[in-house]
Image (cartoon, rainbow over all chains, first blue to last red):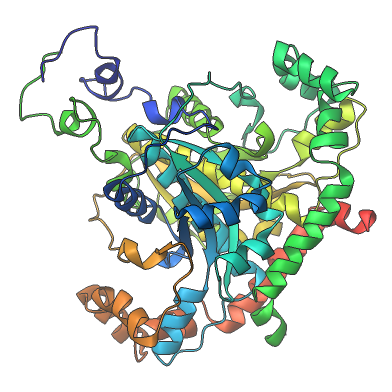
Length: 274
Length: 274
């Protein structure tokens, strides 16, 4: 391969004496919601798994499992648990990212030791572990030319997903990554100014004026204005609070996820230990 | 800059016609626990913040805040809340990664809308958001030549950290990233075989034999054998269950984190909505 000056922007990003350029894969992330028919190769799946495994993990315990769905029948069964998104996206591969204290506990038991990780503390530890690993998998996928989309619906139907994927106690779905070769090329989505979520030394609380300013650029965008109009709300905040994530749904799904946590055994050690 | 064939291994990783090489930063991650006196530049901090902001986020809500500690006095106050680790590592910069539904809620209120995100569902949503953003920050830091270490102690002292950093309700510490220029070059740490945490179509449970096999390579390592001997336990599993993360600590810290969640208001909407 010959380096052609000014032609290869990948070269500009990653190589050269100044190695302090931006990490292209991070800064070019966009969610993909339409996938081509191309299957994800087994060698790619292996690579994604390896990448996930390299993330930081509490006590090197790796408290996560990824249940991969690529079988057509299983994709059809999984899709309604994500309100049809899997089929609508034509997803070839779905990774259900699970908190998993079960594998570690099984190893303890098989070693004659007594584990006590089925409690809220270790749910949170495993949620961090699983999410860090998930982000590695996402970035490696994007680095390899694939696209991804995260399905937040995972928390709404965790109990049913657990049943479908036959998750034992100590394992619960946390999030889901749809993975495949993109069949669309959407623009970058806007984000809040990074200064708005960075605090120095102490948390600097937000005045009404400040918080309105933070969202002002977003609110001035055409697609946001359309969204507000289509939803018949007064503003973007109401699109969230009255429609997309409203109080009734929040209460319902919050109770449901707590019930799923209970059913999957994540309050076991905390009760018996008290 | 001239490309010198065979010399720049960074070129091999990132450029060329085959763009399907491994993402070097992911696969070379190691935790750094000793930092040089070099300060982290403001331009670098800005970059890390931007990278964090590019991660996937539920409903584009960005439910996280990073409270950065670099002031010498604040580092000294923060260190005991991480059992002395911050000072021992000579850390120049500490990012306390927080779940944050407060900023979004403040914006809703300032817009005349009524938010209902102070409940367990949205704690979990924000924990995923915060962790994905944190992993972006970590990888961008490592890409820029910095090193990081995650402090799991964050969950043990979340209430005290909240007080020190003046976190309002709707904000709670989740994890902590120590960031700086490395003053050590440790080897890669071993991980479980990636096949052990990847399941196809359904969760394949672990037999005693299988789970012992998964850990067998780790258990055969010299440093692990020393660890077992130093702790006076029968095996590695007991180092975890009797020493490092024992039942009593797990119960204590689980209750403490739940109390911190309650104090920071994360059960508010779930109660009032029922």
